[in-house]
Length: 92
Image (cartoon, rainbow, N blue to C red; front, side, top):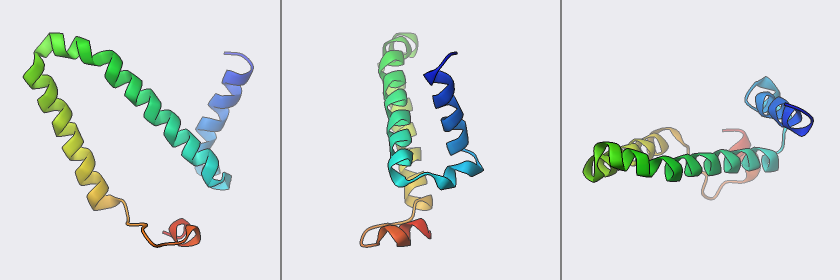
């Protein structure tokens, strides 16, 4: 790896470590957006293989089960931020 890729790798590792608290919300939200795009790509790329391997019903049962687990995690562990200021959210 050369140049910018090492630079980006350094900052990604820094953001997920203790050093991540020094970055502002724009950089953090950019990282979250990047991770979302990566996982969207993986799902779209791997879907045909999984579909052909185990069939349509199992594929959609798996995806709906994962969606249910994600919803439960969000409902149980992500705090409500509606009506709160950015300062209140940072103090959560």
